[in-house]
Amino acid sequence: MRLALYPGSFDPPTNGHLSIIQRGLRLFEGLVVAVLENPAKDALFTVEERMRLLREAVDDPRVEVEAFSGLLVHYAQHKGVRTVLRGLRAVSDFEYEFQMANMNRKLDREIETIFMMTGEDYFYISSRFVRDVARLGGDITGLVPANVATALRARFGGK
Ligand code: PNS
Image (cartoon, rainbow, N blue to C red):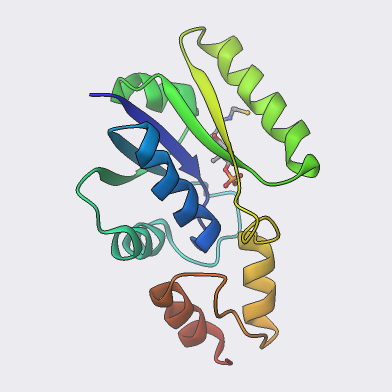
């Protein structure tokens, strides 16, 4: 089965992430969505909450949602998946993604990173901006799936 790993922080999952997952499923038979467990990072949602939000929002048997910690290449090896899928929004994403893809390939020659350009409706959406907008009382409708909007409103109140 042709699988890809779609890793990220997903704090929170956005409509941009969902779009990549849906479009990724046109290229791959299944996706492993891998949520980074990073104790050093100040996260808004716990890894368990992020996994639950993703599972509720995606709800597709072809998509498995898991947590990972440590190096992505080690997790990919553990899962037996050699393709990493990432969304690319703008030129500003490029340098970081380029470095990460090359570092991962240096660590494991067998691992390839595939990029999908984010759709025009989503290129300005990032988890960080969504967190800020929600925290500051802005309207997050259309930026995140309904269950994530509910979770953000429960956390911060607001529209
Ligand atoms: O959604 P994000 O925060 O842009 O995702 C970044 C992520 C999780 C893909 C990246 O930080 C990662 O893979 N971290 C695991 C540690 C690792 O493998 N680092 C070496 C590659 S640079």
